[in-house]
Image (cartoon, rainbow, N blue to C red; front, side, top):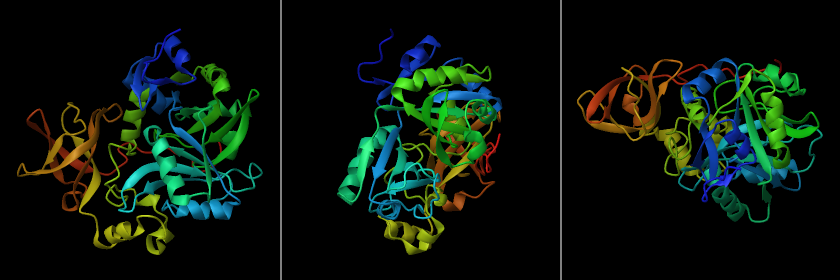
Length: 381
């Protein structure tokens, strides 16, 4: 049996990854596969077929309260997303903010499906490196108003790609019942799962929460379909970047507010005026005055990738910003990146350049996503 790095924890799928030729690396406290057949091959297979990602490092948290109204109101004091209007089975992307409006983490909150839990139960999925931090912050802010349980005994598998729905449709009812950002319990060959129609690739797909003891069997069932192949962290990163999705700790952090990060959709429309969440005063000020900097997308000339940390310069060669994520897009066949620049330079079509090993690489500000997102807005295959 292959042994994981001493400082990194194995997921329940670790040995299966090794048997499939996964190249294992430490990531956010876990040992995970960065690639199997190659990042580009896995990327393109996900765009055209279906890939299975192990995302068990993410923090799966159950929130317990006396009733839904109480739980939603308590969480809304910390998150700017509208949670009180979530329907059963509904999911919402939002952010956890500090008093200065900075993003402590981005996360997804789910209300249990009809009949699944009629009390104040809510589910939250947070970033791996922030889960202990987030729970401590929420407990400190809310005291005993809610109870938070981190589930280390659960795995999370992400089936992503245009054929994901048809693959899963042969195994359970979820694709016929769920649209994008909806969740419900289901069963696959006797294995109990929480199935959510969401993901981090820009493609249609599902995340399946399952007991660690059942994770390998579930993965093997999914791999039984020839359309499904394993994919690692490398392809997950290039896919999310093409989809224009942020990575916490890179494209946003605790000193960047949601308006500057260009994720205004994480703040409910009503709450942009009503406030009522931690950091609301700071965020409202940015909304009124406008941000100084903004996260943008840039497409560069040539084939040399422009990596995180590269300095962005204007037409006069003056340093104006920096790249937060960058890669060579397998779909577009050109370098793409996300960066922060002054708002005056954030308009689509603006010419900028990135310094790569002392040489300026010409680029143009472009709309995101770089590659069109293909979420299923209605249930079905």
